[in-house]
Length: 341
Image (tube, rainbow, N blue to C red; front, top):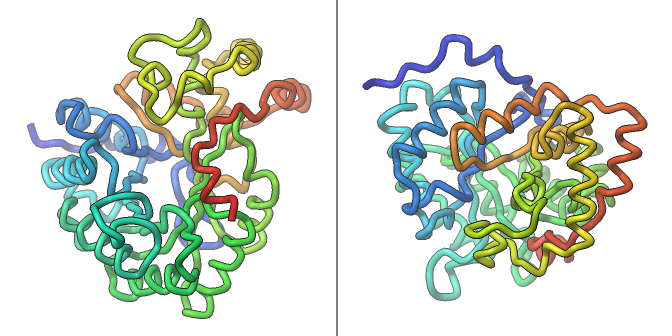
């Protein structure tokens, strides 16, 4: 059946302005890092994307190597765009990135002009799009001059293949440099995408201040700490979980100490009438400098649960103090190397 978007889709989620730009993003955006490769039936993916848009999610975030295999998420999303969302293209913010391993050889990752622009062309082809709304440098490259990487983003925007430029997992100092370089080229940096959660608070050490000062938006990825803050680990490491499979999260990152903090946070969530996952998303959004929280979803039910956190971003001083006691670093920031330079 032909998909028709829900009439009331814009009364569901609050939106926040992205830095000092003209763009507003939904408080919660949908990322396709997990669950949108070839291991998930396309109809399940389609149901999640459709429901997200019906509930006011206008921003869908991808990267060149999301899968598995690499590129599969873009191909699958491109099919959903073609078959379902094409009439709504002008209502959508679609982003993609390049920076991590994508193809063999010295030009298949990092931050060179050759890699970034070739990757963007390939991403557009996979998704069947003429342009993406945001094109990101996915990670800082210590061996490529930042002028070259930012110059590639400028070319992407000037060519019309991307409307805005973004960066991900850059340190505060490198972010400030990126802003300056892009401005010298006549381009504003729209947005930064860092990891941020109650168990990974590195952006509070200066990055948020830089973004606020420079008028750059912030979209926080992994607000659920790769699933640790979903509640699934409260009783240990379940079979089939990311930690059990030693994928982007390993079992040794789920220590007894971390689980103790997570259980305490779960009690705070219950006192607020929230699930642990909802608390984690609401907490990330408590700071007005955070434009959007970027979540994944393995089912429509999980999507709906997490989107319900958008309207519950106010906290009392006592709640914040209680959370601070257990919102401690848990060693889950696997992207720390990129922001260490």
